[in-house]
Image (cartoon, rainbow over all chains, first blue to last red; front, side, top):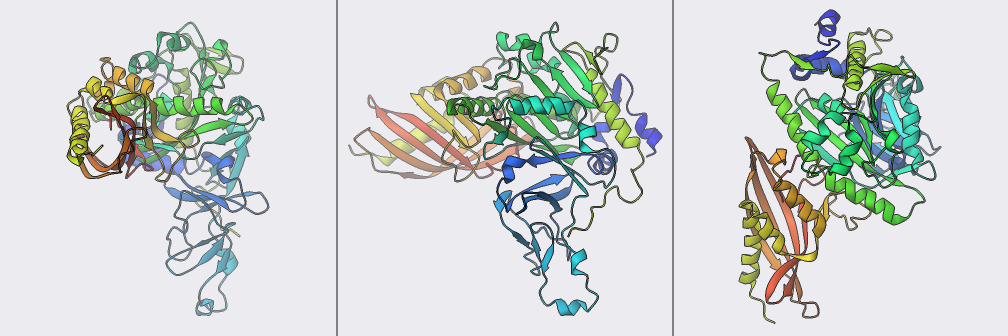
Length: 395
Length: 159
């Protein structure tokens, strides 16, 4: 598929169905989006102490994030350099070493290869220092949000986040200390559908009063009325901005603030850090953390936790209908008789508000922005040949 | 008070059948006014105020869940899932006359068909039962799914 073919799938007002259904396009997304850009990996509060680790993924690459004794964070490929087995099996834990169970190769949590049984068998030229766990070429942390990139070169994290940095800051500043923690445990969901449905749905005020009519009160729906708020294309990321109704409320109620999708895999809304994990063109997993605030009355954190788990997660009264509609969409898109999905709402009334193209609350400016971003990434040449999908050797 | 285990078993089967048959109000009637309905994420979770759960409902939230199912807008239940629950391995604690309670542990296997999608859940369940005016009521229902910490497809039906 040529770049021209890929580019033709995104029109200014529509997206072609194959973007959600073609396995070849999914494979290219893993290479050109998840393999090149910044991907959210985890929150620093998940790996607070020296030796703490968390396993996660960038696309299909298994990753270990570990907290080093000097306080730094390492992001390593969870893959033994000998025969390829994963070396860390748990979701979260604490260890200074990762030992492959197969032949006993042992790595420090920095990735350095520290033990090889019977090394003499490899002869005198064995370069142990070059056989550490492969390290992600780039790691960036903004206000506790850890991002990694499989590409050695390209836009820096700060530049990539653009205007969303300020929103991430606001999300953190709901906590009186400016620091967030996450409650232990994830709400983990899965659906038979493409990962981009969650990207779109994370910033889609238009659907709320229809799909979630069984749950939202009239009062709560007021912030989704057309007269208020904005949808924003913020440097290729999606924002729905309801701050005219008030800042992000500490209790997590849907009464103000904003929803933010940092393309491609991070959703911040209310009390949640949602991570999107694409499994295949028609299978996606969603891991959600609930955020704890520091130095607030415990009752407030308990309220945040309880309201989010009533509404979200695999049995949440709101989220079950989102999961359902993602699967119905994948079902409908199996038909090749109609090619295009419409993203034209607000095209005639969107305007620049400050630096960003914005429009009324029920419009689709934010979606169009993210698909322009998709198109740029999918049709771009790698930053430098050969570094696109290859992690560096760790030391 | 001497407890006939068959009476408790019949009660637990009825709880399962009311859900299978979609009799949600009758199901709610089995619970006390301060009941708790809990699906933890971690197998060793003990504190739903400090650990993320799949469900941790008070009676009020259970009623909201049921109201949603009956609202006509619960899209993920259009058409409604059909479910079969097998309740087995029933073990009872001794009856505590102090607060007229006992604990029943079970293994529950749930088959759910939602449109054409078939799901199987296995769970260890724990019921705290209270004897109130010659009837049993559920004060606490805890369902520990075998796959509680896996990425789960939507569970739009009551478990």
